[in-house]
Each structure stands twice: as C-alpha cells, then as structure tokens.
Image 1 (cartoon, rainbow, N blue to C red):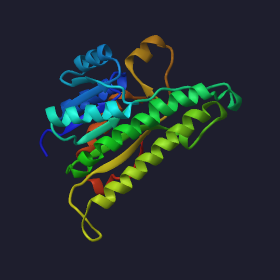
Image 2 (image 1 turned 135 degrees about the horizontal axis):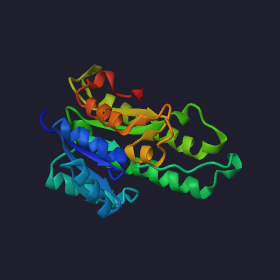
Image 3 (image 1 turned 135 degrees about the vertical axis):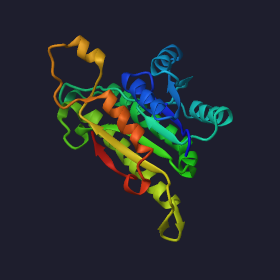
Length: 238
C-alpha cells in the first residue's frame, strides 16, 4: 500500500517527534496530535513534514470531531500510534494518590480508549492497519511505588489485546480462514525512553536498560512492513 496515513497521538514529546520522523522517512503521511497547539506545531516542524493537529484526546466528543475532520481532509487512517502518557508515583503503596490515579487514567487509558474506538473501523478496513502503544516493564515487575502506573499500563495492554482480538475476527475472509494482509494491534515495551535532552541534563549517567526514542521510531515504522498474522496481539520488548 502506498503512503499509509498514520496518526501519532501524543506527538509533542521527544518520542512523538522520533516516531513521526521515522514514519515520514518510510514514506508515510503523518498527522501528529497534541493538546497544546503551539507545542504540536513545534513538534511537527522538528519532525520535518508531519501535519500538526490540536485535540484534547481525553474528550470523546473532541476525538470524534478530530476523526471526522481527518477523514474529510486526508482520508481513512491506516495507523494509530498512541504515545500519550506520563508518570506519577513514588511514596510506596500508601503514597499512591487518587490524584495520580486520576491523571494516569485520563492521560494513558482514556485517551487510548477514545482514539482506538474512533479509528477502529478505519484500521480494521486497512490492508496495513496498525495500532501500537508503548507500555512498561513495570507491568510484569510492579513495585509499591509504581502501583498506580503499572496498573494503568496493564489496563492499556488489556485494551490493546481486545482490539487485537477484534482485528483477528474481522480479518477472517472465509469462515476461519484469515484474510491476506489485515490489521494488527501491538504493545511495544520499554523500561523507559531516552532522548538527547535527557543525556544533556545528566551527562554523567549511562541510563542502563533505557530505549532510545530513535529505536522506538524504527520499530514503529517497521510494523507496517510486518505481516499482521505474526504481529497481531504481540507484546514486543524493545
């Protein structure tokens, strides 16, 4: 398929910029979305060719309006890369505050739920439809201090697996026979992401186990050239 259209949700971050750059380098059309219009415009310029769009992805009505505008102005979406997130934690189990829980639920899970539901029909119909999120190693190795974060990330992974099951069912061409091509939903797992600004702030650190945002970008771009049959539902550690 030529020039797939990919939405990067949460594109203002260093990871969002790196993913957009990798997708553009692979010949894709990229729409990068953030809640702050100024920040997302700056990120799109750094990415070098992405189209910036401002939207509160935690608001279902705003996401529905975004999706309608994208279909009208650009066509159906072939990829949704969900990078909206943030971290809150520390303080042991007793320190897992309701405010932190609400922030993580809104930022990580509600935005994923809203965007994946809205773009699901496009992704399911695309011959290269891809949904990808970035999750954390803390899901399988939680600590008292990151209990809120790990629990929300685990819920996000479960949601992606449900989407993958839907893609698998929708992709059956005849009875139980899978169709050629098809959509895939994937979880990409990191300990933490690393970018140049982090290196500049802490030049003495080595950041063991961290994944560079450029590696994430290449992994995301590679999803579109990997057959869905071996990819859908995968949990890939970077």
